[in-house]
Amino acid sequence: MSDDAPQFTGITRYHDPGGRFSFRYPWDWSTESLDEGRDGVMLTPEANDPGTYVAAWVSRLPTVVSADDLPELRDAFDSGLGSLPELHVLEAHEDAVGGAVTVTRAVMFRDAEHIRQRCIRSLWAGETQLIFVYQGATPRAYEYWLSMGNYCWATLELAEEIWYSADPELSRSRQS
Image (cartoon, rainbow, N blue to C red; front, top):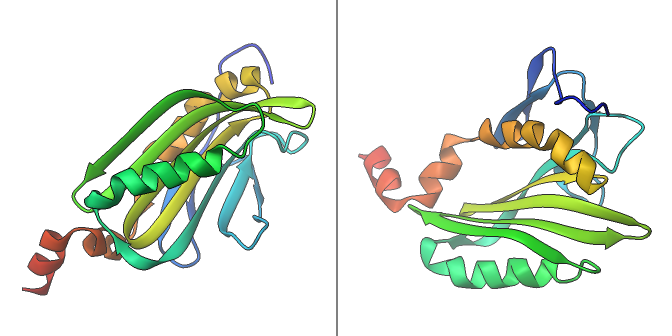
């Protein structure tokens, strides 16, 4: 990691094998599998620094989520984040658009002897939850790679079926 802004020389697109989501990322980042049975991907800009990464995974929910569920989803999300040692919430945003709900938190926390900085986004649409995480191994690494983490998020595309399942109006018009 240099003192200059991060640069990339090419991009590629990650395609979820299940066809549920995709996003663009620098082609030279390393691709890793996720642990704990998560269905997604982890990408690292520097193979020797796995503490800095972008990760995305999806889960199938037992019920359909609606915009009315935002307060409960936000509270559960924050409760889960509360398990991080020495947690400091730096930014908090949530939104409900159509039937989709998003909760975003930028946080700093202790991970063993390291202070990490992370942006974690959860998007619920229909019966699908997508978690998208950008983490810096240190606050400095977070700031350095933030533009790339934001780029990955900005290019996220969800499958049409997920959007249609989240919005009753779209779903009805599609059936007509």
